[in-house]
Image (cartoon, rainbow, N blue to C red; front, side, top):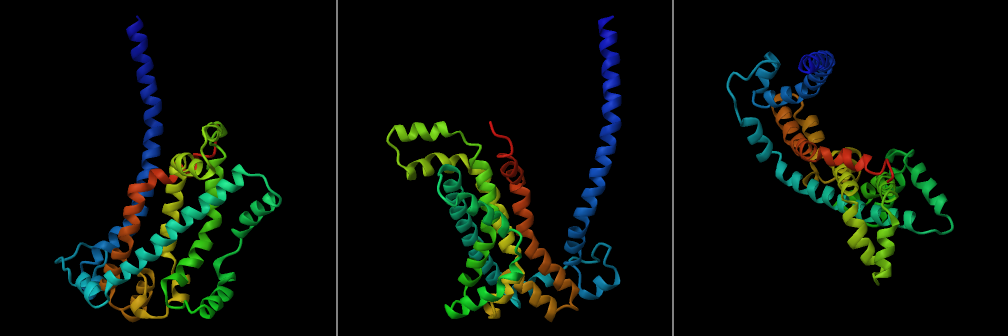
Length: 288
């Protein structure tokens, strides 16, 4: 009798879950196809000559050719642009992580006059787009003689990402119990040891989130790069793509290959670190 009741309950449970699961999976599959199809379409067209792209852009290549990639690496010097992009984005990422963690530590662990005003200014700064400050920033870079140098892109990008990163780090640090730090102070540790040995290791999820967003924003930032970098030999990868689209816009095969080369690092970062993005954004949501 008990076995029959259990079997009936299992069948009902599977029937109820099965209907909902089918709907959920259908929606997810539809969303995945819409998301992945443009990237697959670009990759397939990158192996076609321009004439074939115009003739049949939605079909498989008649013959796979690497000519577009060879042209991109030889004529356009994509590797050099990659080097500048990784230097700029890597420096921006490290700078944002260091300054944001220090600012968050000061805002969550110390009480001083003007603390709430600083918090409000950090939040308010998110409402100002980079377009509203680019003219005075550009003038400063010209006066300091930094135009056409990587530092002219690095400094504005660090400043632009710092507010968001500080808010993320502050929310996470507020969830860290103070007892661990108090115990460390009682053992004779100074503030630098507490920050380096306790706070930083515990903040790895939020630091990973800050690092991922800072890197991707810096890597994809065309506006600041275009304003500050006027020398084509020093173009980062996003600025190089804009140059390719203006000079070789009719060579659709080359355009597809260039887009594929530029998007690949972003896709790799998202695939490998997507769990850290979610964990870092939600870790400080619930205090415990």
